[in-house]
Length: 66
Image (cartoon, rainbow, N blue to C red; front, side):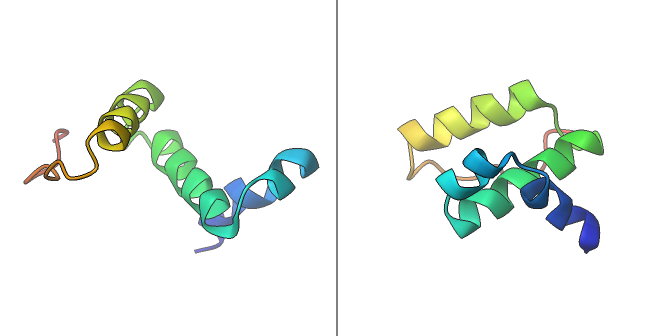
């Protein structure tokens, strides 16, 4: 999907070369979800911090949004 690629390609050059390939894609996909209203940036940041602190924590059984 071309719109998923936009996030990585629109990064500033210094930021683009600062991150590894999959980090760029993850950032682009995350922004895609935020832009489409599937999650908000604060929710994403909170969950990211949680799973960084607890990498073995189970994933949610179902999405929190309906």
